[in-house]
Length: 274
Image (tube, rainbow, N blue to C red; front, side, top):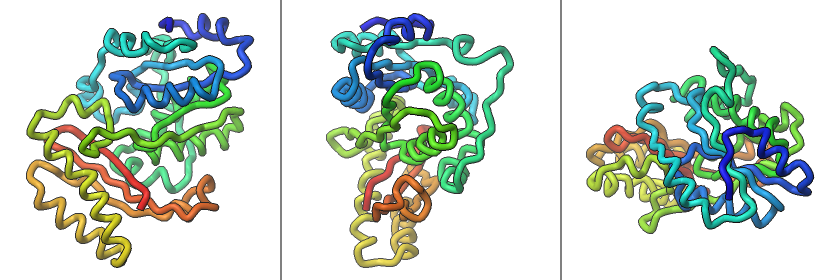
């Protein structure tokens, strides 16, 4: 494992490699990220792991400031991996001076949930992902299903821009109590961490309710339940038939429940197939 701040140095090293995988991250690495890297190493000769907290995708400057960063710890976690190159750029390596995020015309799916709550967020994500994909031209790029709406956005981006890369979604890795692994989890206090266990409980409850209830009844019951949980503020809860809203899932009867909430001041999201 070697770390590089210049993408040109990495390109020289992977130039003659048959297959290259890309795992874009914002650092503060956890087992979820490491699982993406392991999968990428199984399917590619070399793997590039980018560590970069992208300011373009934050709609709140205080959220950007408090986003957890520990590059030294991240690099230690990656030391055991061979055949990976770590890209650790700063803002000047990615963006030109005064550069703004691109505006994309994505599907309606990006205008609900995260798209509605965080205006401009997906444009910011797409801007940096497009840069990384064009920079390294990987054969495959890997993203976690916890950010499922983002995963569909990136697949849409690649299709629209006709980029020659396979976008591969990887299952959400969870803590022992079911909480989806996230860099933000470490910002939770011990008390908040216990409250956060309710996120997967609400999703599993929705899965059970949905078997014998209408969509409206299920959502109503989850909102009622969530209101009773002290210090958990629900931002949205949705159940969507993805075959109706995504070209990439139209042949599958996949229905997912999505949730976003704040536990104290920490914002968490999750989803499961129901």
